[in-house]
Amino acid sequence: MSAIRTGYATTGLGKHERGYVVAIAPDGKIVVGGESSDEEWGGGGPSSRFAVARYNTNGTLDHSFDHDGKTTTDFPGGARINALAFQNDGKLIAAGSSNYRMALARYGADGSLDGSFGNGMGKFVTNAATGANAVVATREGILTIGKSNSDLALVRFDFSGAPDASFGAGGKVATDFGGNESAMTLRLQPDGKIVVAGKKDSASFVVSRYLNAAPHVTVASLDRTTFEGGGSSDTMDRAASAGRDRAHDDGPAQPRGRRLCNGGPLLPRRGHL
Image (cartoon, rainbow, N blue to C red; front, side, top):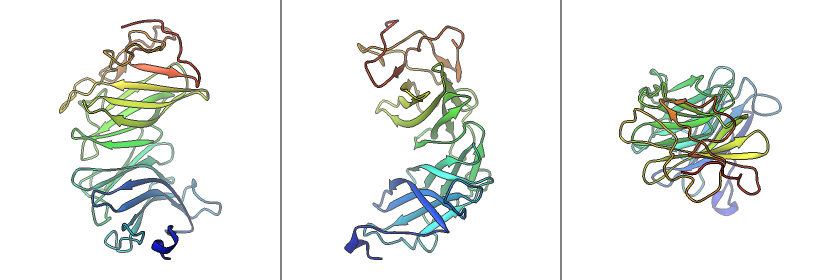
């Protein structure tokens, strides 16, 4: 293999591998996350596991990472990585799914599982969501998103991997758009507000923005101040206070701080700030 001459590299970790996400380490090295499986037809089966490979900037495997530049991590029932993030201390967080549960692992710079994370195991699974589709390390903790009971799920853990009890209800905020939703991507604004986007059913995408009073949050609420501005959206006064949507029975209109789009014009506005 010559990454410099060909412009590509192939890496085997088992019988079948898939790479789903790429992250750039603080030192510029390239990290790829995905799954490795022994299944005949590839990943997704009970033998699938977290797979991570780290490359030097020239495309060669970085042998300071788990001795050969790659590592796998087993979870009961199979697992895959959907998202990667680096903490300020250089540790790598991998987030994904394991048997329809959210799964996380944290690795040190040498590629070993971090024993200070996940009750000494360096990894854990939780029923907070069916999986993690994105992960962001903030100064307050580790933010992940996914799906919980057909709602968008925003979950925060402290740096030991325990649910952050100061965030939402037991570390989770669920947001209902009145359909079958899943959160797919996550970003932080410069002011610390949390923006989550995802999908509803098969025809719409949805966006929510949440307040984040750093460094400690006692309530994670939908941002109802300026998010809609002069745009059009289907709105009503609804907030997720202490992680609970207080207007589940207020009808089908969308809450302020959220938008529902169907690929065409934004829905007509029913309410205004």
